[in-house]
Image 1 (cartoon, rainbow over the protein chains, first blue to last red):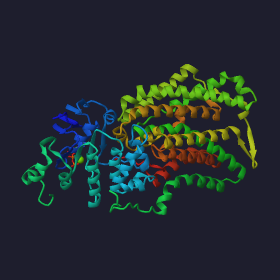
Image 2 (image 1 turned 90 degrees about the vertical axis):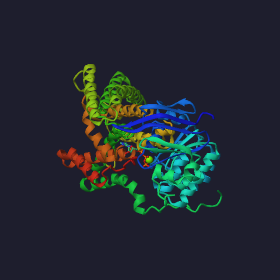
Image 3 (image 1 turned 135 degrees about the horizontal axis):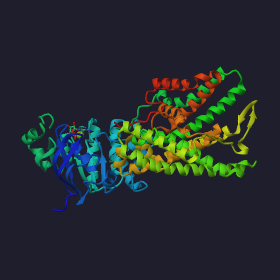
Image 4 (image 1 turned 180 degrees about the horizontal axis):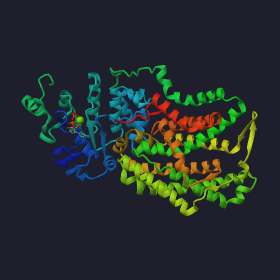
Length: 240
Length: 343
Ligand SMILES: Nc1ncnc2c1ncn2[C@@H]1O[C@H](COP(=O)(O)OP(=O)(O)OP(=O)(O)O)[C@@H](O)[C@H]1O
Ligand SMILES: [Mg+2]
């Protein structure tokens, strides 16, 4: 087994006086989609924000492809090849779609072949290329947020609830885009509440509860085991 | 994926009102000018006052533009910004006095060359001072507004005292360069040459800033950083470094404003920056914190109103600007051109 793309070992994160992460152990294997699941408020977003460096880990170790990034500043982590799609999408509303994308291509001018690929995944971005990003619909903003991460090849993508609040048709578009990203060889850590999407996309899964990872294994295994889902995530029949 | 997606792109057609809204503040400038025309009995006085108001507005804009970005980018409240205005004025005037023969000659080219040297000297000095100010005074208090207010005010007091140590406690009188003295007559109105130059310089600074903010990557980073600094860093940009650059540029612009303001008043004092801070803050607040365009429009409004009211009812000049601030904040509580902040 080769070195995973991302590894968290016993990561602790405090926010103000609260102990939010209490020893998170997690791996994202190379070239795989790893789901990060769990009930609301268990620390999924906090885990992603700790990896990108928005929160500082107070204990434990985070390695990207073997390199220790625990104490690295956020811009350095990003430049080491981590693309981040935050839960709130982090769109620059006053900038145009184009300007958002230009900024996201940190290493220079946008590669036109890659841009065509992004447009094929998210056609509305081409249509509204010159519009202010703040005027996009919710789904289009989510597309832009993912497109910004996709516009350059990264080693690892951290994506927080890309289908939150979206209509089924757009959920399918997102899922298709993420599958293409994976086919491009990316390693992805994906937080997803839509269990059907999680089942369709995930290779491996980690389930969090109360600031820890309480179960990890193959997504297929979790997807098959209704009792396990019920116990870990409190999923009711309809949610499946 | 070749066929059109089922979520065919749609964007609600922005209603006319919605599309016009961002431009409304700009329209306030001519509206105010027309109101002034209605209130002021003679056309020539109105023209003189308008040019004088625009000149004053442009200078306030130059002094304030850096402050609005500093606040927008890092949420830093800098009460010490006026220090750069005073220091800029003293350095610039000192250089001008040393270049006496050039400013005294009746040649526009020589005068402007001397002015340019003075301005460069002032901007270099205040830019460097900004760098030191950011490191020593602002950096230790990131994220703490109350401490920022106290510490930056302290910085201002120290700067004023240093000016007094270096240049003495007396105000310094300064004559404008020969070719910029006097006025030209246009449509029966006397328009001071210096004010016309100030308008031109202010306009040039504004257009240059807009160009940098709209057309360069660093400008994009600054605009994005004002909205969501965290995301800018997550894309891989070192926002802190950008901020230091913006702080230095803003300080240098305040220095430029100081030189221009000093020549406008024809006298400089260690307290002049502090005194200008009231108008600077009004302009930054009514413009919308972090908005260069808002700051520009706000400065023109303040300059015009100040001049019209000072002519009509001298005692009401400062009150009128506070009234303007109240009125604008009642209309748009976040300022005329509010920056869309994340979270
Ligand atoms: N800025 C903050 N200040 C204080 N507490 C916070 C902050 N951010 C998150 N928390 C707390 O940390 C805990 C974990 O939050 P987090 O956002 O990581 O959960 P999550 O698993 O992503 O939840 P969701 O599924 O609702 O997005 C929650 O109890 C939350 O209230
Ligand atoms: Mg979350």
